[in-house]
Image (cartoon, rainbow, N blue to C red):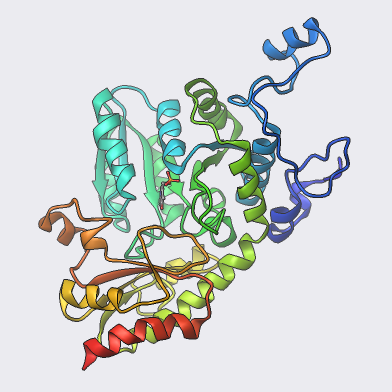
Length: 398
Ligand SMILES: *Cc1c(COP(=O)(O)O)cnc(C)c1O
């Protein structure tokens, strides 16, 4: 990256490839990995200045690391944020944000359709310290407004949701947050900045599980928080002190993953759209949940606030759990796993895996039908994915 590289001058596709790398004296072309825990100084005085924060520079890789910094700068550029702090996992990103910005007695209002561990983090662990979370229907703005109290400090949502692809109006949630003096955090894991930029729509913070599409190939666990510098300085304080920092090697994997992010997300979305349309017409399918389908209740909103519809879809088949398991077990190519964000297509039965711990009533309230299958569409050929699903679906239809 040249010294005069200005993020504002370039498009997302270019930033994904060029932003963040500050070339060293070795003049390397590709981004280097710095697997070092500490750094050395020319003199005691220099060490004193660096430790005292009087001079910028590296001290210890729990605080800063050049490879991690490259990833942070690149992701900040893609999300249009002033600063990014990388973390050891997506959950560490959410925990660090909460520790940094919330105090005892503060309240969170969150969407009901959240990643399971996020709900456990809020209820079981933040709850221990007197932080209360109220859950509302993701797309019901009145419910959000009614759940906000003077103690509300954080609004938290994932959009589109998993596995039903419900969509939240980010700009409207941002207006609510501003009115009530709360911050809005959006978990942008499912769309990534290639398809959705929540900060532009008024969100204060973007949360990532880099484990998913930022890597895109299922190789590493990591996370990140992006937003304005004042907020991120607080998050950085938690990470450098409490220790959920990202390893340089994983940061390098994510940095290289970002280079193909736009291409991958576009291809993921195209494959998912084609599959959703094909599934919707299949006689063994009751319903397809995908915001790219015109039949989706928030299709217009999704179209307006997203650059694509993403790769995750929910498909409800006939025959309840038995039908769903039959379709899953008939696959030979797709991976039966709860993970997503991979070039490999994955298939799972939410009612008995990701949402298995919920009671029947909770599952019904969350819209997780016994016949629901979640597919995170990868980058194999559309024909091969379809053929793998047709085996079970055709048997179910006859
Ligand atoms: C996976 C995931 C997380 C947690 O990320 P990890 O990297 O597994 O800790 C958070 N939010 C969403 C939406 C996820 O899919």
